[in-house]
Image (cartoon, rainbow, N blue to C red; front, side):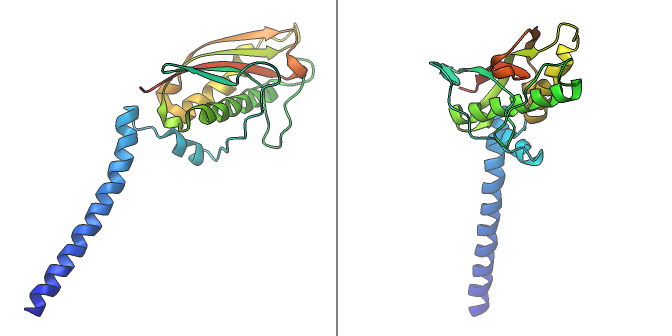
Length: 191
């Protein structure tokens, strides 16, 4: 009788262990079911060793992000480095193409930081819909779209196909505080 009770207890422990594993798999499946593609944006950030920053407060009478229904509109953001400085200068005069690409990537991280502050969890993102990239450029500079690829590539790295978006890459004679890049973005959320 004692052997039967011991066997029953052992079977019960195995069953509990299986339930915990099923629960863990179920939580992972929830993200995959919600997103429909199995991409966990929060995990991708960790895998890419990207740390989001504390969003800077707006410098005027506007919001960094505004949600209307299931769409988030993000204001223009600049290339904020992790140390709190920004990438400053004009492409084709002060900065090389590679520095511009890096500036666009920093701008993408800044946008993701504000987006996360607005919605709480980046796995709520259904699509990166549109981005407008502005490049502070010398009139002779012609590689605006390559600069903004630094942002676009980051969105695809983090969100997979949901990160592919419509965009514009525009050369500007100047940008606020002489930042190298400014990008705004529109994002669709799961309802």
